[in-house]
Length: 441
Image (tube, rainbow, N blue to C red; front, side, top):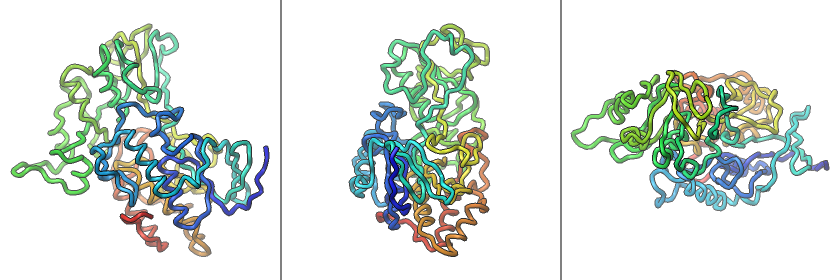
């Protein structure tokens, strides 16, 4: 291994997906020198299915609409559909990187192999067999690269195929097969709809009651209707209670054999899908309870029922991992690193994470607000630097706004988006940082 003796005045950014590109734009705006390393051959992260390990499937679309989902100062094109496809998103992300002239800062086909924290708080980062010295590390690797694979009794002797949703791409996997999808998150429901339309028989296994939200309300994208004062047609009254509104639009899910929802609409990550109810209504998709075990070519469910199944697809989520870092640098809870504002390592002043956060909102503007605070911290001096370092160690603001989210690992770090934005705004105001507007940062 060779060592690069460059002075530690630069920042290392890991990843050139959306959050890494946002970090690059904010560091450049703040005048902070930096390098971005991306293990793939172009920007885009998970949105490029050619990238090994990408969870993208042919029918994947954004679950937030184009009207709320763009980068600051770079709206999605008018010609995009209300809910852009992965192809739209990939083109959009690459167009953003070109428009912002970010490619010049990125080294492609180069994974960060290891990042070692030194005693003085700087970093030795190993890339391409070379060790480089950096003042700080900004981690933006994405959170859907490491599949969560639960152990199911009997899986070792199951005669069918078991795969994680990250390995699924299109319906050729399901042709002439009896298919069970396990898990009803957004990917799971999307893929269950693919199976309903293409498999010989399709089942969806859930362990609890979910709420399935329509993508449009009275022809308006759901996020626009909720966040921008959408109005019902003249003469129609809409319930103010979001639970009653969704129940009125979707109907009683127990009629399909599904459990009744066990939480309020706002107490869980939203599952946006219009088609799943369509397929239940037409008998193309059959609800099943949680899986108890596998026996030969059959799946046995917790209610004692069983089905012959050829393909079991596990839509069981992902693990948060940063394999190039020593895990003991973080405190972990339910598989999630515990960070100040979901950004700042509380004990390592030079370690930042962007994108490891969950909320019911479009992501990119929130990521940029997070990256702006990273750039702020890297440019603070004197008493302001000391004051913010103390906040990172001791400040524990309520980021949930009194909301009670369901008790699952995914919701361990969940924040209420308006509350979260308010706390970030308070930090900006305290340290004299200008609010990001509609113009490019």
